[in-house]
Length: 539
Image 1 (cartoon, helix red, strand yellow):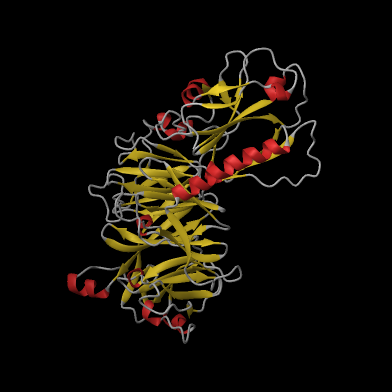
Image 2 (cartoon, rainbow, N blue to C red):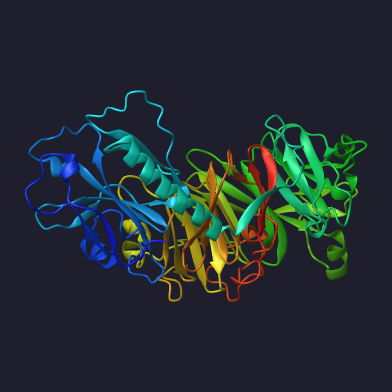
């Protein structure tokens, strides 16, 4: 490894520009000097480079040139790009001739998200230079080409970068993908969603032609078996299981249906339909949880100008007779699931003026996410408030996220019981339980990719992009690892996502993360159209 304090390499002085690219004068530059000279109005704050940290290493410093720039010309120095290869990131900077300062030319690229495709051109344009294309995986339009002076220079730079990339991948290997169903699921029959069963020893997998049961036990405990279809139903979009009440809920063709778990049969997968009951039609999605001490299924209907959430209570008739609870007998609001000894009744309806994209159930509140923001509804009074305190909103990270496109909220997690992590498609940050500035976790995370969903396995937050999973430490925001694949999706609805909207509640709900004890919980994902287990690598 090259010394971190100084490096003999190519650079440019502020003196009159040389008349040929080969005349660029080499000199020494240190990380401390780079940190002092580097200025940026756009990206430096978002990417905590920590250039003066003890572990930082300057691996290489090269000078490339913008493609299409003619040489020589009066302002040829403006066409030169300094490329700094650090131990963790690649920096592209331009030097200002007036004061010698460096400004970022492109966003820094983490080495484990950098892709440099092979040069397939037959004409290397020796008068212009040899092209090198840099791809920042996960970012919009993050592909650009610079020129090296010769094929030899290009090859030497690529060797130094790929060597450091290999070192980063080896050093950061914390998780790995392991095939879970031995290739049973394919592009034609892919798992869309899974729900744990029997304490996680098995999972139910939703597919286009039905629900399959798959054992999660390691081969040392039981022979690995292929998934078996236990419910024949077309177009299943999502499923979830209430094990305590022995019910399976499915969403197919906008219809939420309840099935008794003991009706599922691998030998006769059509039989559960005889004991099923439709909970709701015209549903966009649903979620199970506990609200106000009641076991509920929340069903969301989405319309362009307004949406609503219906809360259905799942009632054990034994509770009615034992505790004398009064239930409405209105056929429109109550139904029984045949042979399951369970009654499902509507007990609350929440109207929302915008298109709902997700919900989270809290102990007494429902958190509602839409493209314009996140709101919290008190289930008892139906009072609504923004999740971010209006006093804090103008100074929150969301207010400084940029004017091009408003960040889209995607998830919300309760951390350490007294603060929430709000996850958007471009950033994540903490708020207090009252919606104000955080006191314990001031970190702001700027995602390298464009995540569409999240999962929490404390102390790590997983951001799922279509081509990779971005894994970060939930407290420091540090990038821990990226795992690459194709068509990547989180299949399992993590238990902590079944309720995180308990703003103002007096006690943290049981699904809150302690940031110490959930990292080894299984997490099933879809990658390359196969069901994979995202598994921690133990030393």
